[in-house]
Image 1: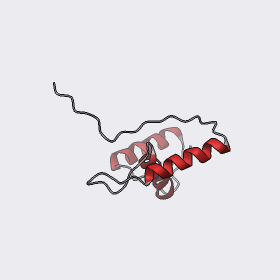
Image 2: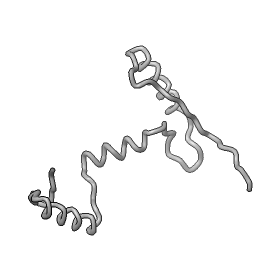
Image 3: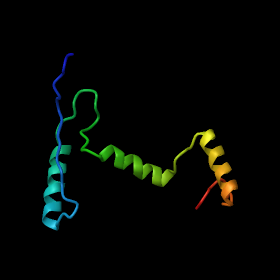
Amino acid sequence: MKFLPILGSFAVAFSTAATDASRERIDAMIDELKRCPAVEGADEVLYPGELEGRREAAARAEGVELPVASEKELARAAEMTGVGDNNGLYCL
């Protein structure tokens, strides 16, 4: 089995109870990271969780398209539980 070296990786952990001073340091670190040149074939340097955060924001703003099979299952579950159809939106 051949192992390839991991190149261009960065890992860091931050307390979720960050103070204003530590938040400034974290923001400065992210700014410095974002100024690094991207590797060939990439548009930009991303920090851990950045892409997921963008996708979550887009999903919250635009919604998530469900496969037809999932929509049918939701409609069936709504009917079974008495949750009404609100123009295709099923709310519990």
